Image 1 (tube, rainbow, N blue to C red):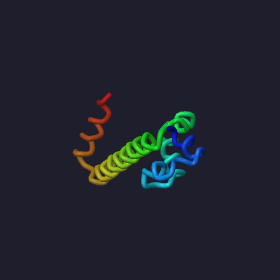
Image 2 (tube, rainbow, N blue to C red):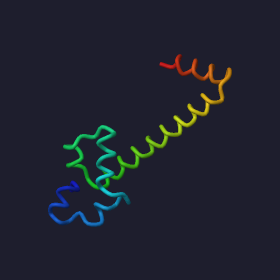
Image 3 (cartoon, one colour):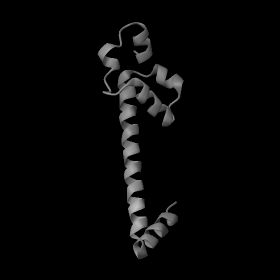
Image 4 (cartoon, rainbow, N blue to C red):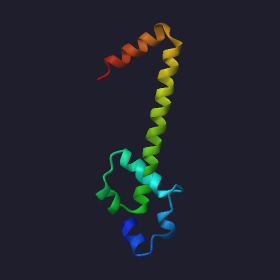
Length: 91
């Protein structure tokens, strides 16, 4: 049963709280990652929790990549030039 239907019927309970996070943050994260409201309304708590975990994993991976890029930029030298060239050659 979709989470919002269950909540309106008074039956969402513990299932709706399964992500360990507050729902406004979960919904905002899913919307930031391109999920539209009609899909979110129809999704189950389990689906929302799954897509939320994947979104957070992607955010963490992007942050790690950014840290590596900044570190490479500060290191300078030939290694950075080779790194940038390899990025520009990749389609």
